[in-house]
Length: 327
Image 1 (cartoon, helix red, strand yellow):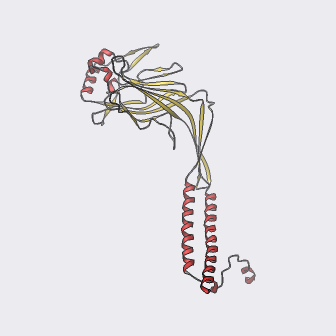
Image 2 (cartoon, rainbow, N blue to C red):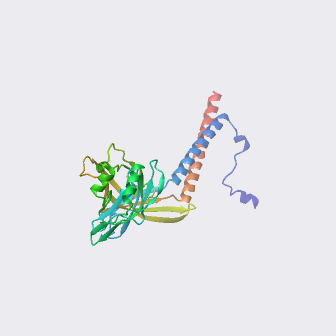
Image 3 (cartoon, rainbow, N blue to C red):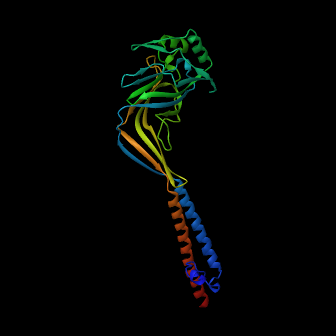
């Protein structure tokens, strides 16, 4: 009974006189082990590298809103004269945009001095009346003397239509600016953009204004023209290599072109204009991980194939050595 059961063994051992250890066999074994390790590492890297695919289609979304995440630093433009106006093609107009968009005062070294909140404006049926605090003039004068800057950061809600965001001296009169700065067209609007995104970011997302720094010799009018591309990002993973789950994020990417005009006279006050339009084409980005079962199967097959080939090579090398030595 036991002998009949042993006859089912498919992994029979070779007789002792056939199991000789040779120098050539050691060399072939080391080479085979090295190749197996390299291929296994390659399979492991491939397993942890998700497969990414991109498809495009006509955007079918007809309404809704999007968010603009902004973080822009002005090293020499005080918060007291910095205003943000938002316009869009539907007729929406926001003066001195606030809410989740904050202005943080910076000292000459770039250190934060605290949040700044202006008195703002009142919209009376399209006629905007700007309200100024009594101490506004002295605040601007002191900020200019201390070489203060401003960090504009936060989020703006916008409709999914073409629009623009303008950062400028807003409702400040030319006479007031001339009193404060002598030559208002030389107000330093040079800036560094840490973040400008239309929605949450994802691995590989394209937001080309992130990290942009403007260091022209003189300030002027900065214009950024953006084409916003609606994007859906799907991240498909296999939990423990076997249980599939998918996370989807609706966001936007954009391309941008820019134009700069140096403000050389009184009729051109420095400002920054972000103009955007919505693309009719949307992009679907899908990132998908490999199956753990597929990884194990492929790795075992690769290692097994390498050692089977190594054994065959060793056999022929050993035969060649014996034939050579008998001659």
